[in-house]
Image (tube, rainbow, N blue to C red; front, side, top):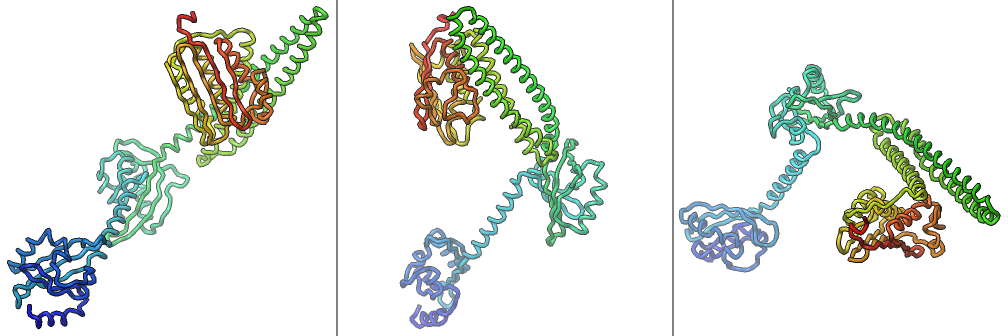
Length: 533
């Protein structure tokens, strides 16, 4: 191209807003770039190769050459190699007056590409909302023909994917309601509005198998060039109906709980009378001699103190759960609607927990009585110590406070020979105490170790600890530490634990400091199963 030609192209094109240029066909040398092209390509040099400023053309250079030889125009879209998300359309065409020269233009497609990508993302969001919604969604036209249905709706009505498209809405309604529904649909089409269907009514859907099921439906509507459409949001109401049946069952269970409480109270009264009679018999025997009388007086004082502590403790420990049960029953009768199911369940759980607490207290009294009467003998058996610890932690898992963690580590052989029932009661008492007297977000560590000689069990918590003075009385009947008097308990648990440990020829000791946690260490001699017979 002559200097006159270049000057002509420069004058003609420098003010053109379209990015354009000219290159030499044989060597792809760029002869001219207007300011718009330089700005788009971010290039300020002179006479580059076309593939230097447009590296993506390297892959289609042969196709470009072939098109120009055949006097065809060439068009290609690609992304600029500038590290940014800039897309351009490249178009080249030979110049008739100068066969060796090629005119090319660039069109910035970035905004169009971004708009297309944004539209695609919005479509994907809609599809995700529609396809993965956890409720049925059906779209129908004014004639009641289904035009769209999400997978959840197909599953609700037992149809395969897209099988609902083209069906009438009435196909999903029991026959006895179809005529009424057609009338209601026509009325809704006259004045469509977003609303819930079936207020104070029972609505039913019809599955493909012919089975009816209760539903709740909310309606919406929209309009486009295709006409007016209604959108139905469908919720399977089977669970709510089941909850109504569950409420009836829970009322029956409440009656059974009340009867059980009555039996527990009668049993406690009998036990109190039995213990009182035992105290009176002991006093009569101690009156036989003067020396014995002095000892009897001391014994009587101790027993009377124990009786007073027992009555005071029993009255207090039974009053709290009974008050909870009474208040929950009173409040429970006020919750009559299905929407208040969560409140009913809360009070039912409180009642169950209180009854369980009463049962645990009574079991401690009964266990103490059986121990005192000599009616408990170890029943030796071989079992897995880690499995027993795991079972107890699973059983007590509901008692854990927020953030509490129970860790168990076992070392040595898993199989041991002890009384599994007595050991389970021991672990339940120690684990539940660790949970009760430890704060939230604390760690309770259980370490078990066996070797050829001994079995060691260490239960360690991060709780409030026990003073040195209280540790001296820790395993006495009815003893409560000075720092736990406001926490529910009978004072019998650790006494029973120590007696069970003694029955299996073991030992238990406590290591603790105030505000620095507590550790109970139990030790048994290792036995083979034959040694216990």
